[in-house]
Image (cartoon, rainbow, N blue to C red; front, side):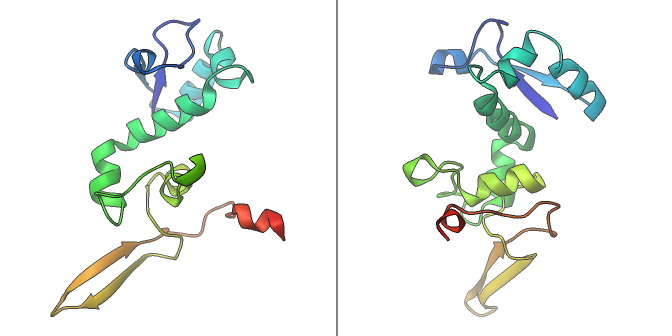
Length: 143
């Protein structure tokens, strides 16, 4: 995994200029990552409520997969794929990136083809397997 870290231990990502100063740190094992993030100052940056852990986590996931990897291999439509949708909500692509490590656009199992061989197939990608945790949508909270 690659985790993007602020260049300064006191910096929190707030502006576009600070985003350009993020430094990638490569971790080859979960234990290595856990140990590093458990140390100060990064523990405070990632896990303190006034820190900037959520944006750094999101940027790190996209950086690890690669922007082109998400666009060209995961999104159903590379031109309109996005991670943040209307009203500031995350899209299904971002949820799937967090759960599966791939930014698939759909939640059905596997791949589906629409159309015909004559007209050309449209391939839609869904989840590769059943996740260990379930999906919960905003609308389920209203039931």
